[in-house]
Image (cartoon, rainbow, N blue to C red):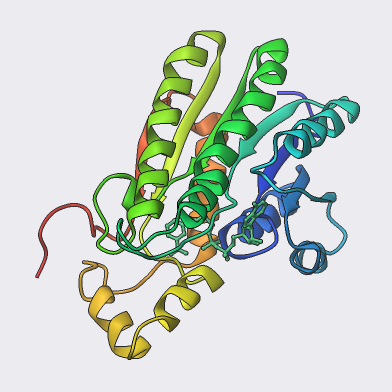
Length: 254
Ligand code: NAD
């Protein structure tokens, strides 16, 4: 393999899993383009990376023109594109009849449309260079229902459907598409979801009890799996669902 610097594009790079993934790739000598809605989040990521090769871009992944411009920037670097990791996400709770149309469309717009737009603008680059890896971030809510999470769950099931189609349509061109599906991960998103409970501490304990490994994941544990799936070590993976949930979706537990 050549020693040429390779590019990785990560959305949601200003917090949680996306931030940990950006730090992990940057420390492994990749040129990381991290995008997020949050300028301050991106600045924090840049501080954590220190002297690594990091380009921060404020992008709303649900806006096509902004994602298109992001990938024009990627092309302008004239470096091989190693991987694209759509990690930006939002979680809104609510039963189907309680959700407003805005909440529904907002959730699908970021989680599903955002992932599709990242694919739409990266696949032509991967096709030109005849290879690349797309690693989407799904959820355990991609593979099973989640009570009270109708919009989130629908969006994350959609991500899996999209990834499977990408695997079929672009696999023959040497482009691999896979999905990592974490259970709860200790990030600001998780904290804000538990903060909605009457007794957040008790709620957290009760969810942790459903995990055979007895705890929630750390962002860096997800980052390492994403790194692996994007790497040549995982050259034969395509269209897989990598459950990363301590065994929570393996079956009934407890
Ligand atoms: P987080 O809230 O810590 O980080 C999400 C980031 O996405 C934030 O920096 C936010 O600013 C950014 N973002 C939101 N909307 C955006 C938009 N329109 N455009 C660009 N950036 C936007 O959350 P996290 O826990 O790190 O979640 C990352 C991904 O992992 C999400 O897709 C989430 O659904 C998924 N996930 C999280 C958990 C969990 O328990 N934390 C579990 C399973 C899956």
